[in-house]
Length: 255
Image (cartoon, rainbow, N blue to C red):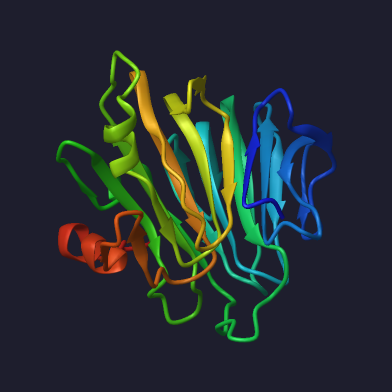
């Protein structure tokens, strides 16, 4: 894949749900090619419509971006998530206002894939969060004994003006895993352009990149299919990303 790919709602193509899912068609596909290590689909559900996830060959993370869904006796409102491990399955039924659900999965199973077979539900009010200048929450921290999914959220305050190049340069960094960032609110500034909700970035492992929030702030979720091993800054610094989250919020406690 390209080192960095940008998908927008306008560019996301209509498609049938991917293999291992069944639901309203078309959904929107952002990244799904053989050269894309991580796949991303956006599913729009009308009131009472059902999305079935699983069984799939890889673990799948789903995030309720808008509306609410019911599954396994629980109601997952906006900002909730779930993990459907390989070999497991569940159905999501949209509430009376419908729902928009984002699903992430690795293109192919990894040799080290854990045993799977479970569904983990995380209602919005159970997401472990911290509040600082940049706030965050962890949905899956890759420490589960049966899956290795990583999914976190961040919210950043707005910046009214374009950031000076030297300031923006300080935020350039890379991760040791392929990742997808999906903008859930506000705007993301990439260079001189602003990208709104529904924008997604697919970023290859060990690729330097950076962004800043737009004037209305920025909220996003970040998916990876494995445990984050290294967060490296362009200036040569690095830190333990998983440890950073563990110190602030601990691990999510699923239903």
